[in-house]
Length: 497
Image (cartoon, rainbow, N blue to C red; front, side, top):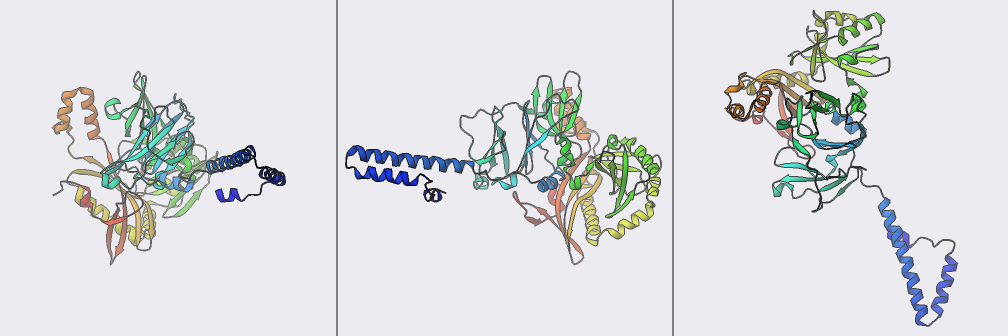
């Protein structure tokens, strides 16, 4: 850059400058030499200043997520660790989960059912030289300054494991990321509290941290089990009411093909419905049948807990406003659909009436699914169900085992796997830690008691390889990127002897 500046033409006044220098050089006095040196130094200073300004104007390296990266990331299931709330004020909401660091601005703290959040900045932590994991031997440490202007990212863990990682500073107003350490005199935001001990009966799978503002408390939650389903919950201690709003607001439609999961109240004004079975679409536009389906699904009754039905059929809706949404149907005879982690009964009988609108019946639908599923998928499903029951049946009452995000390439595939389960012991009072909590007070005891009885989910990321007719199972063990290592389900549980 400096070389280019020094060889740049001196403009149209070049000759005048040259003449001036020649006149100065022709004089022999000290004053003449001093003037010459001063002018030359001034020119160098100007050139140096311009160089620095140009260098400063060069955009910082792009660490943000692209739309495609965000779509892929947003549909991922949340694992054993929930998203973490880092900061919140009247101007912005800052949180992180996995490889995503989010800065949302311009939303209403009043949460008047019209949360107008904007996805201002999404930093892809995979592009930074640090470990973004929230648990393990090297974990991400996020600190926000008191004014809410800067985030300081570093890693905590064994020195030999974190020595090669960098530290970063993120400008929360511009999204700019640069390497650097937190200043020693930095004042850190101290408004975070522990959700478990602060909030009575938190909603869903909640963040460890919460923020208290007067009689209102804010924390993150997810009842869908996916990143895109993360919500901001406002709890009012005066009336005990919760307001739950998706943090991504309208951006929830960033799911694949811009199709989001519809709740019953979203199923209104249908102009088209598609039944998707094994990749084959069956469209329906008949107004009479659309009206029946709209009534059937919008007035569905929520079922408490999960169901063991195979949810592998999709129903995609298009409304008069052009919005597209979907629910997932049970592929057996049950008239049940799943959306956002909740289950609904849409008919008093079976699903024959619904499938009949598309010229199908349950038996022909199941046969179609069997034909469409690959040998690898079928063997993987059978293998994982057998292994999970073998390993976990002794301690968990397994409610559902589900494959999602299946990507197949020849004799290999990657997928996510979700186990929904309950504890067999339905009397928490027999547990020592709950007995101790009982002595600490009724509120703390009741929270532990209810949490123990709640339906739980565990998520796994696998790669499977079909070799000589048998399934080889791999898990990703790399803190950054991908490193598949041969594994057994037994390795995920302790004390199974």
